[in-house]
Amino acid sequence: MILITGSAGLLGRHIANLLGNAGKEVRHFDVATEPLQDVRNRARLREAMEKVDGVIHLAAISRVVWGERDPELTHEVNVGGIENVLSFAGQSPNPPWVIFASSREVYGEASTFPVSEDAGLSPLNAYAQSKVKGERLCQAARSGGAVANIVRFSSVYGCIDDHDDRVVPAFARAAAKGSPVRIEGSGNTLDFTHVSDVARGVVQLAEASGRGELMPAMHLVSGRGTTLRELARLAIDASGGRVTCEEHAPRTYDVAHFTGDPSLAKRELGWSATVPIEQGFAKLVDDYRTAAVQNLAPEALI
Image (tube, rainbow, N blue to C red; front, side):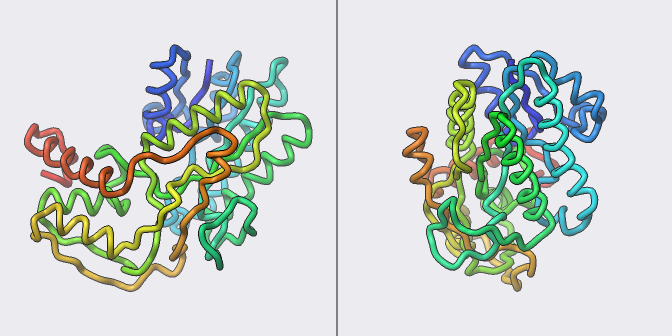
């Protein structure tokens, strides 16, 4: 049995499907589907962790902008959540392995690219600070004998059932509708990684964790940088030229440039990203169009 916290999110759903297709039993835990399934609710989390073999801990205040709006809540959920998971795992007679979902945000503004996992951590915002603290808790638990592995994601995308204001869904939805896109920092560079690739990598890391393997903190990234200007060009082309761009200054708390080095995951897990941004973006635009025709799109698309 594998517990996934944050199981109703974009990545959680895809990981659960992959595990289910592989014959693994999955226990879901997400405040979005059941308000009491909150990682701050120690009684409910303890109950959910009973007799599990492993925990994939995705639950979090997962957006940088949300973290800036409420740093206190971000700390409670992101730091308190993994603290609770590790505490209950340590108290179990058969301690489950734990995978902690971290972020490329922990590096802040790197000076050299691609960024490797041993680069210094210099978080710029409340969200990133919470992830650094979570990683330190995992490292401390490892020192005490826990199997706790850390994975760092970067700009995961690939499904219409995602936060409307995330950049790839926002641009793809605009391309499907032929509406304007807002670019906050056209030169900002991100490492976009398709959710199908990331979910596959997490499942591979779960398999290694189940064997008791202690891995170094690891990227699941494409290794390719794409500027927001280039992403906007994909949206313009996909719309047949109907999309227009509204350029604005970048937000001060965002990391402006990141391209990650995926070689460690390749070496340790045999994993690499397979979906280029052009292919993944085009598929997402098609999915928005199909959903609109079938009247299944989110309200913002109709």
